[in-house]
Amino acid sequence: MSGRDYDARWERLEAEGHNPHGEAGFVDWLLGGAGRVLDAGCGTGRVAVELARRGYEVAGVDIDSEMISGARAKAPELAWHQLDLVVFDLGEVFDAVVMAGNVVLFTAPGTEAAVVARCAAHLAPGGALVAGFQLRGEGYGLDQYDADCSAAGLALSERYATWDRTRWASGDYAVSVHLYV
Image (tube, rainbow, N blue to C red; front, top):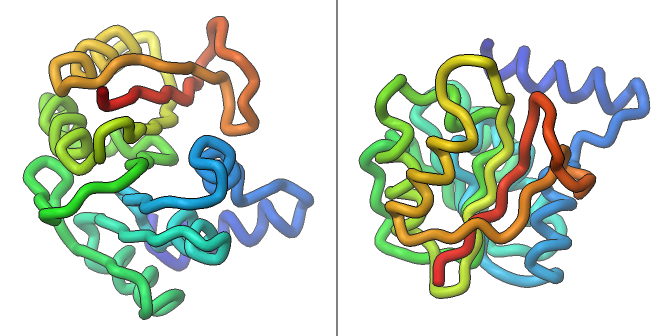
């Protein structure tokens, strides 16, 4: 999907009355209104731009040049990095790293643990890795994700069914919060 198509999809959903900022609202609730956030797999910057509008210090990382160009066009004042989540190193830490919109599923199969480890390496002590993704009957799922987080020094804190903080019991989508302690 192109950056323009991606943005048009969210604009259409907003016009239909859907909240396009559920992920940003979740992170805002989690951090309590202040902090540094890394949007890992930021795409065209939808989440990062909204968090910046709410007063957060934000950076975004994505491997796709078209997506990063779209993000830079929306908010040139923010720090956008065209880098691979498997190996990126910004040399700084954040209060939260968010992987919204199935980011972990868009990485190459077999690289998920490396992505989780690189995101965890960018967390300040007490920081949160927040990821929402679809759960499929096969492929990468919560058991492996939790194991990858544990191997990266993170502990599961909370799990929700949606970005609106409905508690997760089961289902085809999960939003997980793992803390770096």
